[in-house]
Image (cartoon, rainbow, N blue to C red):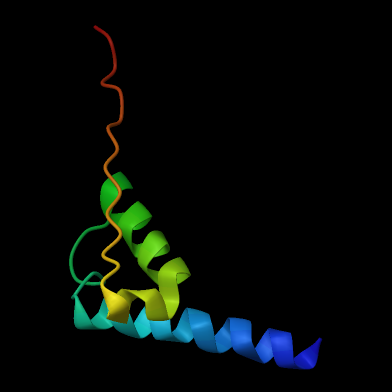
Length: 64
């Protein structure tokens, strides 16, 4: 159980580092950017073997 916990933490830290390298943490965060950051962190080391997760979302505009 302890080894699995360490592996998960290392996996997520690698994903955070990949986000840093791609400058995802600069500027304002919207729906799509937050989703892309979450997907990048979750992908972890897969970012370094070609994965480039992107999330596209639209927020409905309020009606008049």
